Image (cartoon, rainbow, N blue to C red; front, side, top):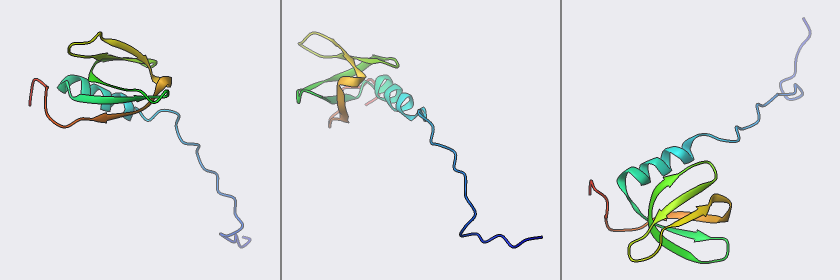
Length: 90
């Protein structure tokens, strides 16, 4: 049996998955708790509200005193939880 040098043996790695499913879990958590969030858009604008609905391509941001928004995910830079609680369970 030949000696196999561990430094020269090629290791095959499985490529990382495109989706881990964690995004959906997090958005569902925010939605169920009606957590106030701020959403930063690619144009630099920041909108605030809570996520009422989401799917693979977009979120629905519900706002008080302003029209609700449907925002495509490709237009979102970040979503951050805001302090204070508006949610049903807080």
